[in-house]
Length: 488
Ligand SMILES: Cc1cc2nc3c(=O)[nH]c(=O)nc-3n(C[C@H](O)[C@H](O)[C@H](O)COP(=O)(O)OP(=O)(O)OC[C@H]3O[C@@H](n4cnc5c(N)ncnc54)[C@H](O)[C@@H]3O)c2cc1C
Image 1: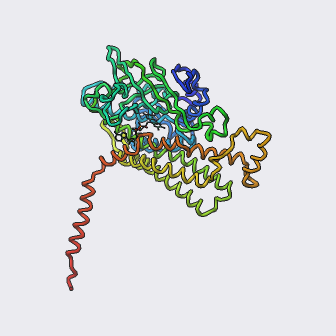
Image 2: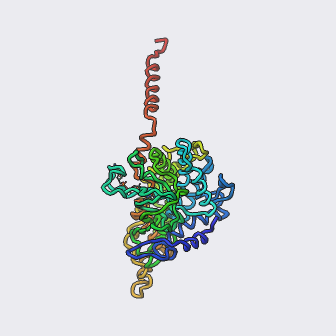
Image 3: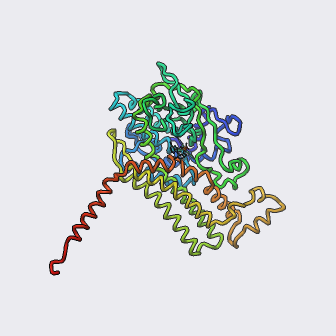
């Protein structure tokens, strides 16, 4: 297993083609827009080698028996699934933001069972290929970018019906040694700081979409891969200073990028699906359940930080004992624990596939993600309520050194004898950062928009069983009412 520092240094060995603000970025590791996200991903390495956390963040490979980082592990039982959720909450508490490694982890977990099922049904040899890839990933402790979301064009049309055939990643050529792929994947969390890209189809497919039913892995600096790093609200603060960033070490969300596949070559040994359209939907749905398990865990960890910031500011403002503030903090904690309980429940209520991989309860996992999309914004609303307007109107940190106004800022932002105004400003910036638009959009659309969870719930709930329960009750009630006391 790599340490956090070794992970960061390992990224220097790759020559990726990355663009940001119109410029090619030669040194991703030290770029101020990217470094906080890299620090956050490094926490997934740090925890696995930290005595306090390594029971959660490391595991034993079921393939090699070697100790590996849990972010590369395929869960074998209930304990593995529960530890996955606990690990994510812990990492969320430490970083206060996204640590990016779980999309790839869930891609690895999902492809393990889907390739096994494809081989069972179709006589292909994807699973053996995938196992070789997985062992390499575990032994080198690679960070994997999970690339599922296509540009999608007109959402009402199938991949093969789009006005432009490249709006979903597709195979444009098959050669003896491998395939050539073209297209793009959008919103890729941690892409610029991953070692490899694991591509999966993003939707269920019909036989007409065979070229789009493709899954494969490539090194993150493979020729033809182009990264366009996304902008975030207030991102220029990353190169303007420290305090105004709010979370200067770990940043906001995952530093997402668009990945362009400009006719990329993939050798056959790294191809895990190629034309098997009937398995695309299974893959997407299974991945979604594993990934939705996470949201109730990592986001509750993030919100623990936000609750802590609200407690600190309430104290600095002298309102910590006010009944409505205590009430609001309790409401925040209740929502956060509700999110987390969903992540734990779907882990405890698990099943397993024929290949031995443990699977979360999909209804509970989807309900947990749905709760996260609803509750995260509610918790941020309450944090803003408690914090007050200063989180939206603070002066820049440069003013703290401005000889004309610095003393006034210290004077007027100081709320009590024992309050350091700089501490208050830092807490305010943290709350501003965590309650801004980017994390809320992530909770809404990351792992699929809320409607995607409703669709799964609608489909998996056994409505007729529930109806029968009601009919039973009514029937018993009728029998009950037919009964008359014998003495009247
Ligand atoms: C911060 C962040 C990080 C992310 N990280 C990753 C990542 O690492 N890897 C990855 O692969 N993806 C990632 N995603 C992508 C995420 O999974 C998608 O944003 C999500 O699936 C929604 O897709 P979309 O953004 O294209 O929105 P859309 O699909 O356009 O959805 C917008 C709205 O349209 C509705 N809609 C969509 N299609 C239809 C339809 N056919 N009929 C009716 N209504 C429809 C949706 O329900 C929703 O209400 C990330 C997203 C965010 C915001």
